[in-house]
Length: 296
View 1 (cartoon, helix red, strand yellow):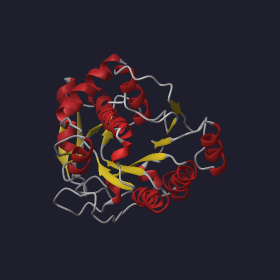
View 2: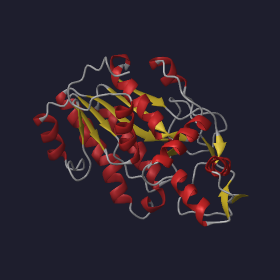
View 3: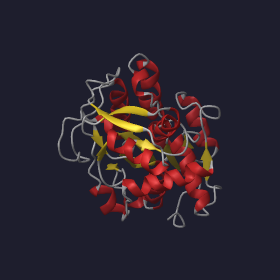
């Protein structure tokens, strides 16, 4: 998967988040040495500071950038627009400029929230973006910076990301399954749960085959299959052996500050065809996540 990596110094931002932690886990599990990777987070590199980004890339002769850093608090973003855009758009602009200046290949992680969720067939990589939230708009702006600045980059949109690390739907359901006898979960939002270590493997595959990326290209990656949040919550409870009852409700019955996409299913054909990636289904990802969760 990574033996053919041609890069010597790979900057990974947001390395302490769930995707960054998952990336390091996948590397350890597969015996991939970390000597080519420079893992950073806000305490070691402020990517909203263009001078800091340029200095880091120059001093370490960075030739690839993997941006895993993101403002992901979807509801909070509605009242924290400036910070959301600073991280999801401004920082991406800084990284794209550095990639251009130092001739780096770049991978940017984006989201299904760049779409309005009004479709009824899987979103293709060529479909027009139409975000309906501050979070989605900030991520779409980050994509535009990559498309307009970078010369060699892959934008990978994902959805419903979860793992045994950090804060996510899986971790919340595991906690509620122990604390509550019953919960209510929306059953009218459909998408594809994505096990973060599976996305991490895909990122490593794209890095290893960066020569296949023609200029700047957009790809979609989630696990296979699509379900509702209600379906996912029930599956998590069943996998964990919890007796917590999951009740089905509508989005109207469970209002949130941010409008969630009703349909977040992404077409995965582009990444599978270009890189030969075999994508596991969501049930398989959930079983492996639970197994990892039990060891922590």
